[in-house]
Amino acid sequence: MAEEKSKLQRLFEAGEFVVTGEIGPPRGADVEHVHKAAEGLRGVIDAANVTDNQTSILRMSSIAGVLLAQQKGVEGVAQMTCRDRNRIAIQSDLLGAWALGIRNVLLLSGDHQSFGNDPQAKNVYDVDSVQVIKIMADLKNEGRFLNGKKAKTAPKFFIGTTANPFADPEELQLIRLKKKIKAGAQFVQTQSIYDIDRFERWMEKVREWGLHKEAYIEAGVIVNKSVRSVEVTQTVPGMSVPDSIVERMRKAKDPKEESVNIVLEIIERIKKIEGISGLHIMAIGWEEIVPEVVKSAGLLPRPTLN
Amino acid sequence: MIIASQKPIDEIKEYIKDYKKILIAACGTCVTVCLAGGEKEARELAELLSLDGDQEFRVVTPERQCDSEFLAEFDENVGWADVVLSLACGVGVQYMAERYVKKPVVPGLNTSFMGTNRDAGYWTEMCQGCGNCVLEKTGGICPVARCSKSHFNGPCGGSADGKCEIDPSTDCAWQLIYDRLKSLDQLEKLYETIPPRDWSTSRDGGPRKIRRPDVAIEEG
Figure: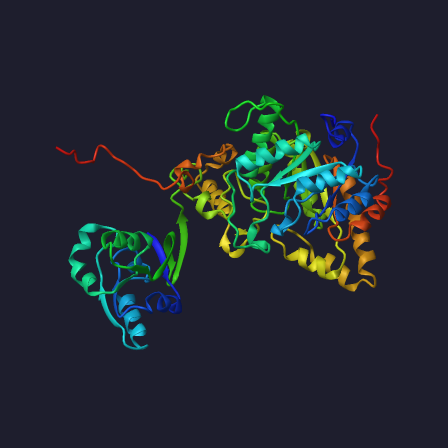
C-alpha cells in the first residue's frame, strides 16, 4: 500500500522548490510509450502529470498512464477533467485511482471537445472545476461523497488545479482561483508562461490576495520544439506569447537551442518571484529535452525525502 | 422564442419522394418570426419542390401547430394529403403526428434553440430550459446556455478578450456576467461558490412535465 501522503506533497511541505513534468499518453494502448517517457524523467522531476485527453484528442486514460509511470518510479499526477465524466464517473474513477496507489490529482475543466477529433461528442460538465475540487476535498475531509453517503475508505488526494494568468477577465479569474483554493485546491499549476512581465504582474495580485500562502503555486513553462509549434502556441486562446519570442525563434540559426535558451531565461525570472513554490515543465512531444532544461536551470539533483 | 432553420432541400425531397399529395403545414408563431417555417417560407418551399415533377402541394398555416385548438380546421386538408410536411418546431411536428394517427408527418425544419434575434438574419441561444433558473446570481446572463462548458463559478482558462475559446465570434458568458455585475455594483456575487446543481429538473431527469392543480379542471 502506497503512503497516504504523496512525495509531491511532502516536498512542497518541506519547502523544496518542486519540479514537475508532463507525460502525454499514447494514442493507443502502448505500454512502452509511457514506460519510456517515465524512464526519461526519473530523477529529473519530482512528479509527472499524465494528461486527460488534452485538447480533446483521444488518448490512453490519465489514470492508466499514471499507473504505468509509477511502475517506472515516477510519481504521477492524475488529471481529471469535467468534460467527459459526470459526478458519478469522476468519483468512481478517482476511488479506483486511489486504490491503485495514485496520490495526486489535478482537477480541471478540460479543453472543449470542439478542439479535438471528436467534435460530435456530447460534453458533460455536470460539475465545474470549482465544484469538483470541493467534492474531492469533502471526500477527503469528511469521508462523504457529494450525495452525502459515507465512503468506505475515503481517498485523501493531494489536490491540484490550474490557473491561467493570461485569461480574461483578470479579476474574475483571480476570484475563481480564490474559490478553487477555498474549495480545497492545495497546489496550482499555471498556464505556460512566455509573457513573463505579465506573469510577474499577475503574481503581484496573487500576493496581494494572499493566495500564494493558501496553496503552492507552480509556474508553468512550455518547451516548444520548433518555430511552427511556437506559432501555433501563440494562437491558442488564453495563451500569451509575445511577438518578440516568435521573432527570436524565427531568426535563430538553431530554433531548438534558442527555444531552450528562452525557457531558461524565463525560469531564471520565475525563480526570483516571491510566492512561487515550483516549476511545471511541459514539453509534449519533446520530453527528452526536459533533463537538459532542469540541469541547465540549476535544479539538479532533485531532493530526496527521508 | 423557438429558433429553427430549414432542413437542406435534398433531405426534404428524400422524405417526401414516395408521396403524391403533400400538405406543407407552416406555423404562425415562433418559426414565422424567425423566418424558417411561416406561410411565406412554406409557399416558397412548395414552389421549389413543384419544379421537380408531378407531386401536388397545398399549404396551410395554423396559428400554432402545438395547440389542438388551431388544428381542427385543417382536418380536411390533412385528409386530402398522403403526407404532412411540417414546418413547425419539433413540438408542432409531434403534435400533428399525435393528432393524425394514420398520416405520416415529416419535419421540414431543424429545431435549434430558445433564443433571440440579434440582427437581420442572426439569432443566438439564450436559454436551455434547464428547469432551475440561476439568472438572479449571474446578472441576468445564463451560464448554462451561454457558457460552452456551463460553468457556474467563473470562466475557464480559455476566455480571452471577451471571447469563448471555442469560437472568436462567441462571447464569453462569464465576461458578460462580470461586466454586468460590475455595472450593477454587485461583484460580490461572484465570490459565492455555487454548488453542484440538481440536473434532474433538466432533460437529465427524463421527459419533463408540469401539473398545476390550481388551473386543472376537475372532472365531475
